Amino acid sequence: MMAKNDALIDNLAEPLNGVTVAEVNINAGDGNVTIDRLTGDEPLLISGALQYVEKRGRPTRTLVARNDRAIFTLRGRAAGQPRFRLPWAACNGATEWNIHLNPTVSSDITAHSDGGNVKLDLTGMVITRISADTGGGNMDVILPDDAADLSVMAKTGAGDVTVEIGDGMTGSNTVNAESGAGDVVVHIPSGVAARIHVTAGMGKVTVVPQFSKNADDTYQSSDFDSAVDRVEITANSGAGNVSVNSK
Image (cartoon, rainbow, N blue to C red; front, side, top):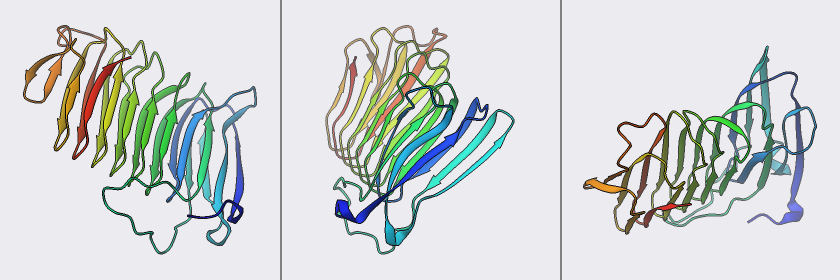
């Protein structure tokens, strides 16, 4: 693990310039990444502090904007020789990225780490899609309230996955949470119409009693088939426990 005094900080601040819709692509290399909302009144699309190793160079970034739409891409430099890790062991990343997105912008987020922890606190934001994965770290995702037709994928090769679904979802929403070896936990608002597919290869499955089991690996609320506003959840672990709980 890199010593703190070996790390430098690259400060991130991209102006908003009238953008209302953004595709945000984050690749933290082998580091940890935290994404949340921008606070304050600064007219920024995205800001943050990006830790990096001097000999690797600064992270690269591109911003392509046209009218009110933008595509932002941020990528850490390659680490060279990969660190050895056991395939079932969750790993902490070598660097820390803290990234803040403008909550007024409708965002499509892709976040990746080779083996670090990924945390997304999307409270108070407008989100249309999330695809987040890590090779071996933990995955924590808090979804916003009042999301509409949201598509979520949260996946790790070895760590734990926790997804908290926000209140007031509308339309057809999908949430996929998966770990190769760790525990998977999904927190769901009470009263939401949902269908839940759960598998745990070597672990235990626990689903809140409000959902009835109608197939070997599927649970469903009584109003799911007729509901206009609903969520379909898939939660899988190869070796850990899987649980779906009420908030």
